[in-house]
Structure formats: C-alpha cells, structure tokens
Image: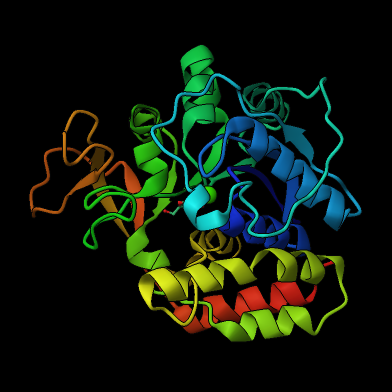
Length: 309
Ligand code: BDR
Ligand code: CA
C-alpha cells in the first residue's frame, strides 16, 4: 500500500523537483501539498504549487493549501531560484480566492487519518508550528515527520552557521523540533553529498512527458547560477533528498541525537545545535541524516523522473 504523504513546501526549484518525483512514485500517495513562504513570498509559493500540479496534471490531484500571507520570514532565495522561484520559467495560474489555508489542510488531513500520514517539510516550518500552537493534539497524529533542514558539521548555506529553512523561521523550527513527533532531519551534511550533474538535464530534455518538459524548463538557470557562483558543474537538490528519504530510508545513514535550534544568537541565529558528546544533555529527539548513498539516491531520482506523467 502506498505511503500517505503531505508535502509542505516553498517552491523553489528543488521543491519543484521533489514534488514531481513524489507525484511520479507509486510508493507515495501525495494527499496534499501545503505551501509556505520561504524561497519566495507566501503568495508566490502557493501559485507555484498550483502551477506545478496543473502542469503535471496527475491522475489524482492532491489538495493544495495556501500559505498564510502574513508569514514573517527572515529572508528569501530569489537570487538562487529566480524572481518567481521557478527559474526562468514563468507560469500563469488562475487566481483562486477560496483556497483553504495550509494549516487548515494539514489539520483536516491529519484528523482524517491519524497515525497514517508522513509529513515532508522542505521549507520553513511555519505551517506545522502554527498548527501545533493552535491544535497541539495534532502532533501525535503525524506518523513520521521528515524535515529538510539544519546542519551538523558542514556549517550553513544562508549564513556561516545556519541552513536556509531553519533560519527563515527559527522560532517555528524550534517549536516543531521540540514537539514529540518521530522526526528525521535531512541535513546539509547529507544533501550536499549529492551533486546532480548535466546528465539530469540531458535526460529530461530527451523525454516528452509533462514532468520532463516542466523540469527541463525550470532547471537550466539553476545550473548556470551554480557554475557562476560556486564554480560547480552541477546542482544540489536538497529537497529531493527529503522525498527520497520517505521512499527509501535505507539509503540514508542516520544517528539519533538531541538537537535544538538557536533563536537568539547574533551570528548563529537559526543554527541547529546537536549534542554529540558521549553524555548528551537531553535524550535524542530526532534521527539526523548525516550521509546518503549518493549513487543510489541519484538512480532513484533518475528512475522516478523518467516515469513521470
Ligand atoms: C533548503 O533551502 C531552500 O532554498 C531549498 O529549497 C531547500 O529547501 C536547503 O537549505
Ligand atoms: Ca525548499
């Protein structure tokens, strides 16, 4: 039986690839995609979720949740993913005014299938944080939470110390990671082990599926920026690792650790601090992915996207 998942995301190019991969994989049943601001504004993130799903047009449409327009976020990633978050591609979507808010969609779906749903968060954790504040009992209804975020030993990617998703809404991340939910954190230590090279673009350009056409339109700018800015002949697609972790946890090396989010530091705001001492101060509160099997994860991504609609 397929694993029920809700994807909570801020597309963003790597979120877009993650969504396409999840929709393509029969092991996952994507019941909802809830938008959050992060890489782009809340409104744009919602539009991007809608645009991707409309273009893929999967046989079973997931519910779409709209990001809260008043979200307070510390930064965005438009420099990396483009002004509208999906590279050079521009999509028009019908402006829907009756969308349910992401927090409501999360609440309703969890209540309908308590203990059955895996939530994969690949953006700032604002939605779950708001949900847990308003309806604390929903935390116990999540079967597993996978968070793409944080770092252990490799420093940050938005500041020297902090990873982007955690930094954007560190208070939310603190609340969510303190909640009693079985949680796996897919850190930069793992996601940066996988560089997707130009053969991914070549594969997508050679296919006629809607998934391949969509991704071939949005990905090229990201390769360009990675080459210009970081001198890399390839890109990181952090969020895709989060979806692969839901499909194939065995491809990740994890360690149970006690961790907290720094919310006051001037230089370290949004950093994740893990107690790696032999006698940590607290009991482990999450499984932390430190490594991934890069060749196997890459294969899984290629195979999955090759089978998209
Ligand atoms: C995370 O930051 C965002 O820009 C990406 O979409 C990903 O979720 C990686 O640090
Ligand atoms: Ca993201």
